[in-house]
Image (cartoon, rainbow, N blue to C red):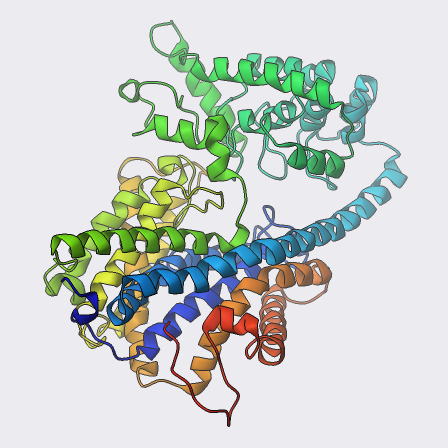
Length: 608
């Protein structure tokens, strides 16, 4: 294999796989549109949703479970195709021009627009919540959250006597009375609340705990009190953050959330308090669990676990990341999670840099790795396609693909400590190694599959059976991943969850390859147009759909209809802009290569 251009492999244009890659990209519009219909965790929660938004959560999990694996599999295929057609230098140049450069431009233009839209949607939602809270205040003149915020124990006593709950988030900002006391540093209020029924593990509306709140504002004495009352220093926010991470927030993040919460602070005092909190929490996290030899320790641990579970599973990651694995932490590589989440430089992985365009950054890394391997293989005269054909284009590929994917899937959600269906999402400057390895499995398979020269006739031939069966596998995986008790999958359920998640990703990928081959194998002009437009649509859809969510979340329409409208309007607007303002411009050339209007002299078809 001294000359890559002479290597074997099908050079026909795979319209079906090009369309499938675009389909996977466009599903991101559906996914991000549906997130507004799952209460909490998004810029705005749509008022039309009844209950906990389970149907939309299932939809999001179903899409997330296969979308990016399919995208990276297709990307691996077309990367290998470009390499075989044009050589290694052309591959690197092409991907730098079509992937890396658009990503850099998007970071300057698109991502700021996204955060602007996010702020608009959040403020629109907050204005409605503030109006509702104001109406409540007009009747009640005061409430438990205000009393906790100003440190008024006497008012809290009056509200408690009148039957006011002391352990629920407020309707405006989703913070519990204990959370407000923690934010303001009112130790005496926090103590009174804990003495009178408030739970130390109760979640704020965003999934954080009072300890996160206290750590964020550097409230040392409140953190100390919460620890004494059984507060968990390992409690994780849904985004994976520990309380100690709240003490490491950068100035911009601090200013934003302080302003959102209506707080005030002195930077020097805040920094000094946070420094003490970090030391206090570090000591608490390194302190051995009191369950080994002390009499009654097991009962205390069980009781603490019951309190945590009753509070909604606030701390799925309770094991000490610094402890020895053999002492029962349940973590295979605690040092890895310590580096990823706890150490100061862990922000390189976790700080949001790329937003919804993180996958382009991961693709840059994978293409770079591919180029390095291809170069080394060429120098050594080695072949990159060692797998027997039956392990690539027949159902026998499940025998190796599922176990390998399970190995990567094992590390998602802090090794299953935080329930998650599909891969983790890290948008930092450095790709998380376990996530990069997960997508490398699919990317690598796509590259190997290109060398089989089978034209799609075998790999997805059973798609009529595979796709319906994949939905059954999805449901089984969701049941095992998210137990009814709100905890995490353990033992056999955990391994079953891993198996079904890996199997689902591969079944959907191969089944869709068969479906698209059957329907679009010969090509279709309209589908090719949509494939060209998909890159632009995905780059630009998030700020638009978030802004539309902020505009429409109060509309009295059925939630399913509203989601369809969001998708249709977002897609329609961006398609119009693409046709008249992008496709035949330098921006369109940057994304897809030069395109000519009908009647113009034809040029060579750009490589995908």
